[in-house]
Length: 215
Length: 315
Image (cartoon, rainbow over all chains, first blue to last red; front, side):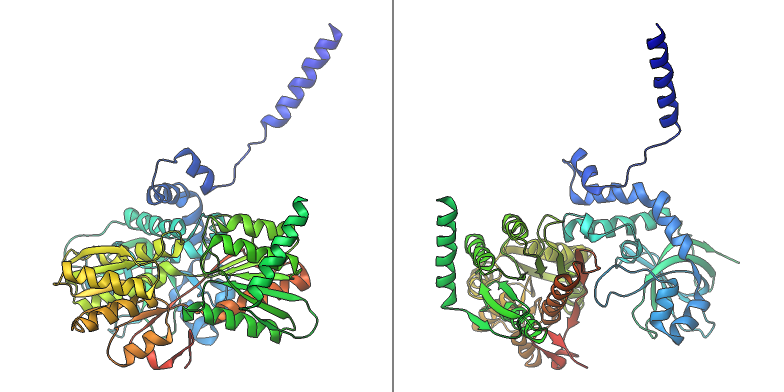
């Protein structure tokens, strides 16, 4: 009797000790793939993008947000220093920096009817287009994917799967945006989003993760 | 007996390949084996030349071998490299699935492999896999194709060898752009296995069945050269041809007003980078980098073709 009582106490003790810990699994896209073997790469990666969007992607964007004006002067001073300070990029030679920015501009041109809908903004007040917000559903580039430190090419089967992940994240950005109707030209837009840095002259091709129109 | 036979076989493979092999001698840092597909395609030749030059600069002996996209031959060449006690293997491989076992065998023999251009479907076996960002490159090529086509017309796609991941990813990159334009209609899609002669033959027969084509988008430059030759022979030099690789042949064709565009893969630099990572790994036991790395591609058209030489862009 005594023995079994002791045993029970130990068992309960052990149980309650572990009960406080929650075992959190690392995200493993391959394992997700096994469960859903019947799905195409595109579907699987779309699901994975959805799964990590609110929990991992948006917090990473939020943690790296820089006001666009501040980033511009940092870039003009020294691109690599600006990159080290604010940017994100995957391993590899000559990979461009990705930046999360917040900014405000007025709409110079709006192409909201296209499958690759875009708002062209002037963010410095000279009347020229200097930022393009890619509203989608067709969104170019892989800035959202490449900026995420936890999305490593090595963890994916091949370039095809990795490319579909990029598309999946772009699709999530599009899905979460509300594109206002009516003529947007002349309106003020405030946005948060990511872009891949090319050079100091090019228009920034931003994938917005948040956007509000109006004063 | 089994072991003996294996050594004999690999010895034999060594003798066979030595006949068609260049061997460079340098300081005594060990041997780097460089394995690529046939040098008939200048892309692979540029890789071999780039890797060899960098390896010699860094003080290694080199052995340059060609597997001709044959996994069995590649397997024999791995045995050769293992038997020769190579310090590292630089590899543009003969198939994403078939290569896994060979790279594993080298690893078991203590020889690290550094892959360029093509991936394999496993991680944790090779030390580095440095590949061109084929999807990004294909999208650049497709955007240029759409622009020159004026967003409309019938077109043909020549796809690469199916066992090669790069064939699928480029096709996928092309279509993710082109399919957004409903007035661009694909009337034929065939594999010409990366081959110039095969592309020539396929293009001839496609053209007979579809005389009303306006453009041809190709998975690589050798197929673009084959397609262009067939089109020219049929008096159809009005057809818009776009390739992928950035070869000197296609550069010359672009400058002469033939092929319209291609996408440069930095093959020469990529091969050198693989050797640098191999050297780093041999010296320190780590490259300090992720295994799989992407390198961005660059669009080449009449504006910048003159700056292209042996898979690198100057200026």
